[in-house]
Image (cartoon, rainbow, N blue to C red; front, side, top):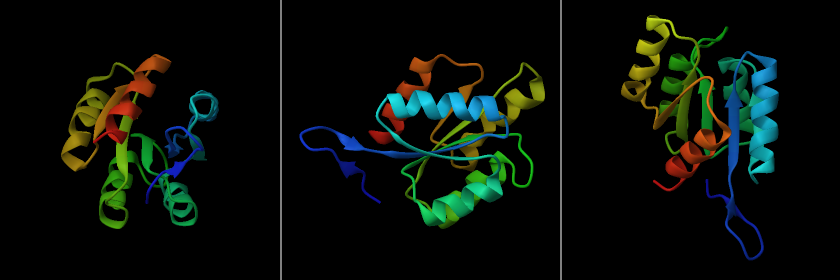
Length: 133
């Protein structure tokens, strides 16, 4: 899926953000829309697959620890069904277990990772990176 083109400017990329924390989901949606992206949201991995089938995104940004289909399962699913989609995995907290899982998401197909909390510029930079590859 190719990004849409704005008249006289860069392509508009569609981003699917998946997180079970409603506040995080809404703040990321606002931030990304202000940065010029088209944004779809889902509160769990199972919902994200349905959204992707109806309104395909160029980039998936997913939390790791969620109900119904966690981030690792979602990354694996996207790599099989939507292999062209670039993936950014994110997770928060300082627990060793969470850090190990986030570090390992690249083994499952994530193109980039973000540790929560992150600065808005870190998110925008991660998107620029994955969209340019």
